[in-house]
Image 1 (cartoon, rainbow, N blue to C red):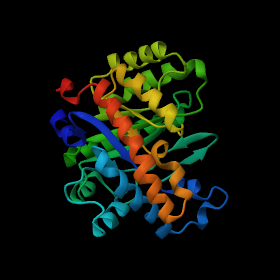
Image 2: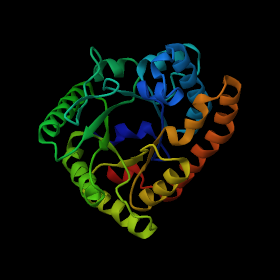
Image 3: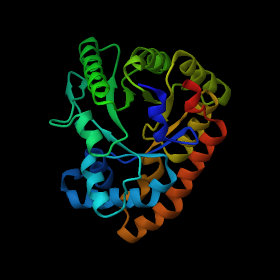
Length: 291
């Protein structure tokens, strides 16, 4: 994949992705005790409000294709908006603690491109110590990569390392990112450092950057906005090209009434997203440096 094909995902050759492709996890955020009681219309109403308030401040929007289709019908999204659609089925299967992702049945990169996606995303849970699931997850990525190449659409890998001890955390992210980067065009990573010292955190991010020949962005790991903002600054100073941010920006809004939600999104969440974008513009590594 030529890096020129990533440019539509950028603003000033930097990446600021609004993430709202949550499905089952969004229902749990709205009503943790009874997520299955949340209707599809309620879920879409939240997504539509998030997109309407925040997509103007992002370089691309990561959203499931069904919600995107409805947003377009309501003119919340236009044909000019840059969209990333997920390939994976919501959630994961689990056996003996090992997590496996599955591709959405009947959904392909080719169909995503036809539906208006500029890129597609694959979420991949990974623990290198779990050999059986690690092998299957690697095969899943390679399959998705092959399908994306045939369809002529960039693949963003969203890598989630889980159940790794703190002393192995940085190495697990570094080695996994290095292993998987040949099979994607953009990789979204958790924060690689466990240090609370900025200089040490930056060095951990620099080691990631030095090991990759493609751009990487920071994706959230359920932290609050202040934590994510600090991590993003360290990541960009260490060579990251941007972020993929979701709940850190808008999570408080989802349990509010419709009017309160819109106010929160338009005032608080928009301000947060702008501050993240400003960090990327000040410190981030431009995508065209990889060309």
